[in-house]
Image (cartoon, rainbow, N blue to C red; front, top):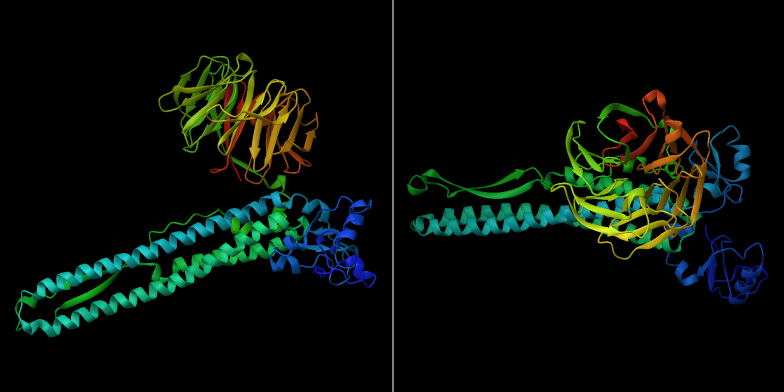
Length: 562
């Protein structure tokens, strides 16, 4: 649990009561102005990050109260045990985890936890859950209005019918209207009760979002890591609440209907006006769901799914005999596949079953391509041949516009709403879809045949000159570099899966290599035994979990990834 942040920890140690103005999460104590200056000057603490006590107090209570030291031994956490899914101090390791083999330094596992897939998944799940709750609330609100409109209509019909008969119907008219109101009131009451429950869930999710934002801004990496499991449990509980609401009998669409008694026109035979019924239809609300995320958002996902667990299946061999050198490929959301036929200046489009559909003839050599769904368009780079990026409409098979580049553009990808591409000798560039506002994300001497991929806040790049794969953050800072010429020679096409694993086409090894998100582990997942011969291009499609790999000539392969 955090120390008392209202007083300076250093002064308090020597029995001086002095108010703190800043908080150091690494020292776990508040500091007054004088001690803060000394804290920033001392070698052991000068690199510590401090925030104002006012900002620190904005953190959620479960963050402030979480223990950052071992409660049993009162020692700092230094190790994380994957087997028991818990942090440990050194004495814990000796006493309890001596035989555990999956022990990781706590500093390694909490590094960049705020940009980890688990933290991102929680954020995305909260956004999605809030949207789902709002859909449910809107559906119930609309049903309330529908009930009201139908009640008004039926009441009008009843009164109009009433005018056609004599006073003898007054009694049964009152009876049927009471029945109508009673049914409408009963169903409305049930829906309103459900809406109250929904609003409670919505408020809970909004509070979690607020806590998440405060954690991102103010919590330390360790605090965030230690409290993340608690948040994930709350998120999981909220998801179960939403599912419970959907299964509720009151989620069925209720309508009011009038069935007029056939004998109503024979006044002397009629003993009632009719009946009011409540019909139920299946709920039309469709909620979004991040597949398996609620079940998988556990701490080990911060480390990465084991590369050995990744399997390729349902191999499809694709005929590209007519291509004069494939350098780029992509899987479209509808399952179609596109290939850059570099030497023949073509884009080749295939159906999802691998059958040829059409070619798009270009005035440039097509090096690499990326698809952006918002415009249903394809961006194609020219590579060594010229200095342009064409934006192409695959429906009309025409060039919509052209973005000029000062030098040769090679690998290209889409980062949300902007294009990211390799600019020969200049670096990795970002440019708007309309060609405006080009800026350098990473400045260095880009080699020929370089490719780029973006995942989250990371940028990945292949360098054929150095036989390496590098990872940068969105600010252009180098995070890691992978280089092993026995495994990776002339790396070209690159793509990233949903877990942050990096797939690279190793052309001169005739293989595809997977690199872990931290750049420390790798595995050759495809080789010449699988039919690879000078593979240049590959693309992982995150929605369908499919991997497309293309040899430079003749054939390509499509796999399911699990």
